[in-house]
Image 1: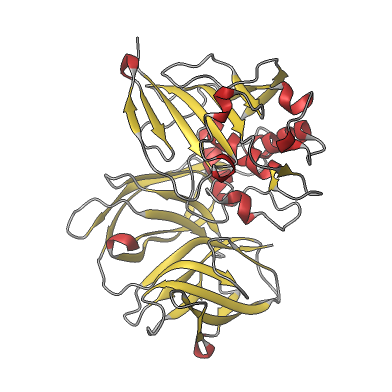
Image 2: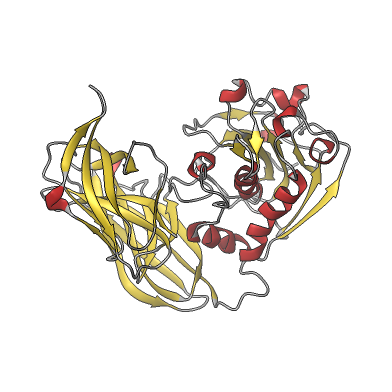
Amino acid sequence: MPGSAMKSASGEILIFCLTLLIAFGGKVTAEPISGPDVRLPTGTIRFAISPSLFAEKPPSLSAVRDPIGMVERAAERWRAVSALRIDFQRTQALSVSPSGPRGDRISLITAAATAENLALFPEGEKSPPAITRVFFNNLGHITEADIALNPFVRFSDTAGDGIDLEAVLTHEIGHAIGLEHSAAPTSIMNPAFYSATAGFSGAVRLAEMDKSAARGKYGPAGDSTTECCSAIIGTIAATSGQKLEADIWVEDAFGRLIAYTRSSSEGVFALRGLEVGTYSVYAQAPEAGYPAMEIAGLRQISSGEVVQLRGRLESATDLANVRLFGFNAGLSRRPIILSAGLNGQLFLHGDAIKGGQIAVGFSTAAISALNNSRFEADFDQSVSAVVVPIFVNLKVEAGEFNFFVQNAELKRVYCIGCVKIQ
C-alpha cells in the first residue's frame, strides 16, 4: 500500500510547520509544504457543498446573502485562467474527514459547527478564517480536499461587516488545487489575503503570479488566446557554493511581477505557466545576508520553452530590509494600492532603515520616489519609520509591482509584490 499524506492549509499570518508520522508511512504537514508537485491528477475536482451553505446558514454566515454564488465565483476565478475543471454537487455531509492517512474521497465545503470542524479552530475567532485539508498520495496526486469555514468568525459579502467570504473561498480553493502560501502581499495565496482585501469592494482578484501558478500545474484555459506555457527552472546558491532558500521572481519589461516562488532548501526552483513574453529573473535571500541580484536579464521566452538557470548570490552586510510598510498612514504588511497620478507618502519600518543612507525605488519607472525629501517619524518608543514621498505617473501599467530599499553600498532588498496599481 503506497504511503499518503495530508496537508492542512491555513490563513494565519504566522505558519508553523509540523510533521507527524502516522500509519501506513504517511505524514501530516502544516502549510507550507515542500516535496512532490501536489496537483489534481486529472485537473478535475468536484466539491460537495454542505447544507450549512444552502439550507440553514449558521450564525457565521448570517450576513452573507448568497454563499453558493460566492463559492461558484471563487471557483470561476481559477477556471478562467487555467484548464481546471471544478464542479459542484450538494450533500448532506457536515464534517470534514478525520485526520489520518486517508479521507473519505469527498471534497467537502462546510461551515457547520460540528465537533469535528470546531476542533480545527482551537483558538476560536483568533484561528484562521478557514482551513483546507488536502489529502495526497506519494505521487503528489490530490485525492481529496476539504474546506472548513471557521464557525467562530463572522463572514460577509460586500454589503456587510466581517471577513470577505469570497476572498476566503478563492484562497482556500487555491489550496485545494495544490497551491501553497505566498509571501507576496498582493497574491490571493498570501496568508493575510483577507485583511488585504478589507475595505476594497470587489477587490478579490487573482494576481499575475496566482494565474501563472495555476497554469503551471494545469495548463492554460481552453479558450485562451494567449500563447502558453513556458517555464524557468534552476538552482540558486551562494558564491561559496552553499545552496540557498531564496526568493525567486520574474518581471516583465514593464516591471510587473509575473511569477514568484521560494526555492527549496537545496536551492531548487521552478516558475511555470509563463505566457510568451520578455522577462527578467531575480533572486534574493536577505534573511541570510544576500541582497537582490538579476540572475537573467530581459529575454524573449517562446511558447513551451524551458529556460534553465544557475544563479549565484554574493553576501553583503547592513542590508536595509523592510518589515512593515504603509501608504500615507500606518504600518502593516497589507499591499499598497495605487492609481495613476496619485501622490502620497511611503512609510517604511525595518532593519537598517532609520538613520541609514538609504534610497527607495520601484520595479516600474512609472512610480518615482523623492528620496531627497524623505524624513523620519516615530509611532511610539519601539516603532519608527522612514517616510518617502512618491508619485505615480499618469501613464502606468496596471498590475502587481515591487519596491526596493537600497543601502549606501547600493545593495538592494525588494519588497516583492507589495504594490498594486489598479
